[in-house]
Image 1 (tube, rainbow, N blue to C red):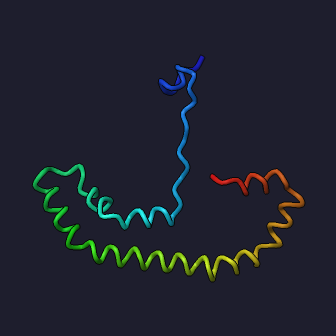
Image 2 (cartoon, rainbow, N blue to C red):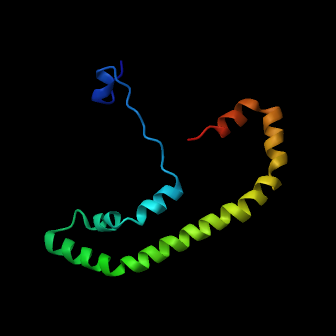
Image 3 (tube, helix red, strand yellow):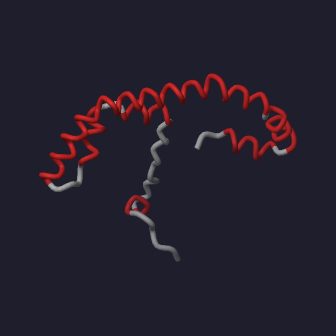
Amino acid sequence: MTEPVSAAETDGVVPTVEPKKSNWRLLVDALKPSTVWKMADGQPVVLKQFVQFCLIIVYPAWVAGILACLAVYGLFYVTVYPVLWVLFWPVRAWMKKNRPEEYAASQRPT
């Protein structure tokens, strides 16, 4: 007999898993000052204040870096991704025809 993994299983409630955030959403969330401010959490008081001060000074460069990442990420999806989609079309078509279960599993979001 196996032991229940969590208290939720003993109550008959199935724990739900939140969907994974997209990379776009993670980058946009990183632009918020509160996200940068929270990077100092868990530090002793004086060290936390110093780290937050340094993060405030670095914040404009942080925003510029995140915007550059978003631009590169967007350019990838506009230029490289469609080319790869066309190049690998024969592989997708073969998988869909010969291995429909595996193809369907690969199309499900994770």
